[in-house]
Every structure is written in C-alpha cells, then in structure tokens.
Image 1 (tube, rainbow, N blue to C red):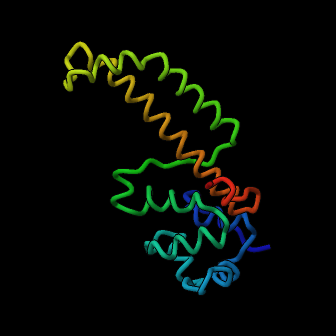
Image 2: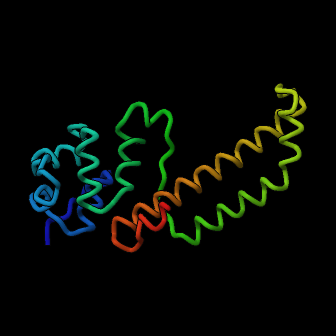
Amino acid sequence: MPKVSSRPDKTMYMLVREELGLTREKASELITGQIISADRLEKIENRRLTARPDEILALAEAYKAPAIINYYCTHDCEIGGAYIQEIKPKQLSQIAIETLNSLNKLSQVKERLLEIVEDGVISEDEYEDFCEIKDNLDKMARAVESLQLWVNESAAKGNLDITAVSR
C-alpha cells in the first residue's frame, strides 16, 4: 500500500490517485505514453507546477476519472476558472431529482418568461422574475452537466456503453 499524504489541502489529482491505491511511480506507468514522470506528478499534485491539458486528459483516462478534467478547468485554467462551474460527481438518482425539479419549475413559469422577453426588453418590474427564471435555468444546466459527468464516469469505469447512450 502506498504512503498516503497527510496534507490538508490535497488536490483532486492526489485524492484520486490515493483512492486508487497507486504510488506516483505506478500512476506514471499507467499514463498513456508515460508523458508524466513520477516527479512531475508530485509537483502537479502539490501545485508547484501546473499540468498541461494533454497531461490532464491522460490522467483522467489512466485513473478512469473524467471529473479530473472539470477540476482542472475550474481550478487550474484561467479561462475555465472564470467561465466554468465546478461539477461534483453525484448519484444518478440525485441528478434525476434535480432535473425534474427544475423542469417542474420551468413549466410553471414559461408563460411569464414569454411575457418578459416578448418585447426584447427586460423592464424594472420584470427584472426580479427574469432573474429567478435565469437562476432556475442555471440549475438545470448544472444538472445536465452532472448527468454528462455521470455518463462519462460510468463509461470510463466500464459500467455503461457510451456508444449506446450516444445514439
């Protein structure tokens, strides 16, 4: 069993590797093309070096953990950090409940949304309702992203046939 770090601020890269019971040496051997040495992986895990996107893709594939990609985009990429929200892996049942809840709320307010956007201008008296509708749409978008992450993680672990789902 590899030594487990006692750092309180572990990155997802370190957490996933440790959950898999891999040493950095073994992890670097698993990575396609061995593009990350154990030394470089240690520096990435401890934030002394920022990984390149190709390294993150290789880590996600080797660890069968697509959530690493979202983590990288939201924590280590300036553009992603500004424009992408972090998606935490969830159970399918929780994703379904969040999605259905958002759909129910949207069906209740769809006429109000049409009224607001009909003239192409959001007036002061419409602003509060519009913001509430936008917040609900944002929740739905996060639920869709959570479902996509669940699909990718399930496929990476061999629990789901991605070609059947992509049809």
